[in-house]
Length: 278
Image (cartoon, rainbow, N blue to C red):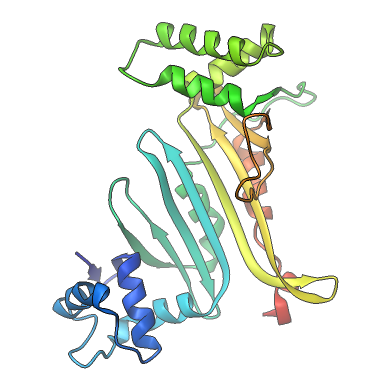
């Protein structure tokens, strides 16, 4: 059921409710399959009897209708993938957060200056110790098939950490004979310590070779708890459908929260990168 909090200009809406707004903005009557959603919105006063939209919605709908930058945040943890995001418009910025198992998200207006903080919050980025200068790079190289085998080994009833470690290590060794020694131990630790994987994708209209073009930047990270943050270099984001298979390389590089923060910041386009200098 949709709802809103006028004191903080926040809304709890599902995609189907956004679809109703889109039809009404275009002067159309929502189709029959969206009729129940229309009734829900009318029952809480966001839509009038004649399809008129509440003034409180103006900022949100203007931003969604004419986005300048769209940011998608997909976080995959114990409960599967959850999609969050931020939409930057000409006159406002709206953040939306989902909850595992629910189809409604909370939309709230935020200050543009807090955008990086907001993205860091969505992926639960925490400050950690910065490694010492000249620390050797830590890198794990394997295949997507090995990762799939490790996840299969973790399926089923929960086991203690020791049993999970043994099962994962065995699955990795069998699926990728080239993964051995310290690298095998390291990757086993990462898989068993994994809290969540996440990726942030930023899209906007820009210019490429003098022509208007959709521009995309993305970042994928493993949050491995006590084992730290690992940037996924391969498969390289953004990933297109059908691009990744079992034989595709998987490359993870050890990072830290300060570097991840910087890479999140780099995902955002500068004003001159936007089409028409918006």
